Image (cartoon, rainbow over all chains, first blue to last red):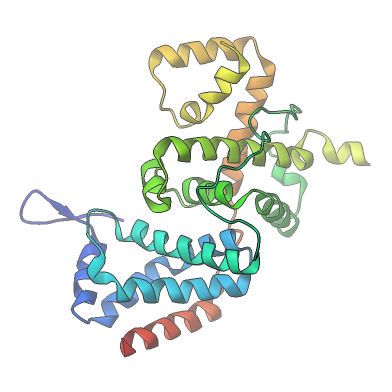
Length: 208
Length: 77
């Protein structure tokens, strides 16, 4: 989104203007923010909770919380990353509820060596996804990312799917930059490893 | 450079955030290690595939319903 140049030298993100208007009770200004970011919030919530109903609830609750807490928005971070932080917390809360007894935390150290070194070293073809139809491919991708621990999944989604920077991801999740980097590398390598089962060269030919 | 050392730098290499000197060392390793070439290429492809496929679309009807619910609650705040 382009920044708006003000009369001075400072640039103000258009969201900041909308936030300021919403703070003064302009619900239409807030509606623009909802329309701008509801798809992303839904996607993030669905990735974390892996549950459609929970994701719908997260969208509603995250925006409502943001609206109620607009006064607490400092403006030194982007509105979007502030909103994502709320949405991630809401999503993790719901995931915990569904997995009572199981630890679900973004900062838990996931004790696994998986993904630290590649094991499946088969090469993929140039367009491995072309081996599958669209819906079959989507199912493979969903199933594969669902298998990651929540902490890895969340970092991968924010960094690689939603395009937040490492620093923004760290701020959003309350993690250090090295912790984000470490989780991202392992998430990427685990996904790669798991996708190799489907995308290795001549996978389909061999099965015939 | 070992494969473990190469993998530790993989993210920075994929995101083009390595110094000229480190890049030269990494490329030197790649010239002699097919496994790391495959790992790098398939990891890059993994990211591309997830970036380019929308796995959880919000249908328009649901989107509209959620927007209405959110704004109705905001108005009551």
